[in-house]
Image (cartoon, rainbow, N blue to C red; front, side, top):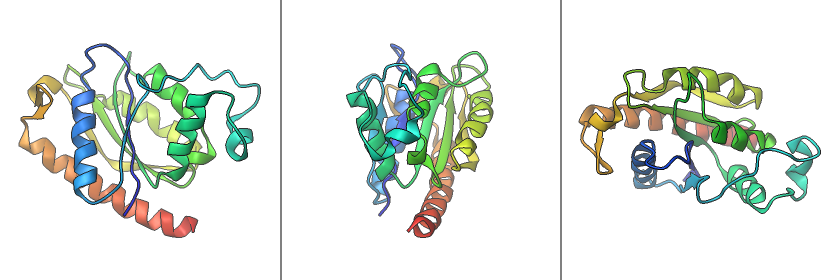
Amino acid sequence: MLNIPVILGSVREGRKSEAPARYILEKVKAAGHTSLLVDFKEMPLPFYNAPTVPVVYFKSEYPDANAQKWSEIARTADAFVVVSPEYNHGYTAVLKNALDWGYLEFEKKPFGLVGVSNGPTGGARMIENLRPIIENFGAVAMRETIMIGSVQNSFDAGKLINPELDKKIDGLLKSLTWWAEALKKARE
């Protein structure tokens, strides 16, 4: 059994990425893994303002209670699924800030990336811009990604209405769990 949190990369009202994130969360749990939705709307982080780099806090206490909680979630994770919209051809500020609060927590762990948009690009540019950030941690961004363009055609009232998307999610999770098991064994 693996621990695979699903990170929701938006805090906007009416966010369209929440339904895919919750759907993927349930798929991870149905596969027998531990998971939780990391929602920075419910666990707000201040903009990274610590007097030193995050690796200093890895063995001590973060200066913010939610940053500490986020660090503990990330430390115990074996892999991550990031579900995020694309803002102005990139990732959201809330997602970048959350990643800035950590470092060693992400090392040698795989990330599955899911882009969401109302338009046709499906968050493709967000995914490509996020890859170097993840690789900077010594982490692995899965080659397999999911780009949910015109999300309103895939989810309705939180329910999946596009069966092709379910196959893509299964493929991403299969790859993610393979890497998570391999890297967990290597870290031990």
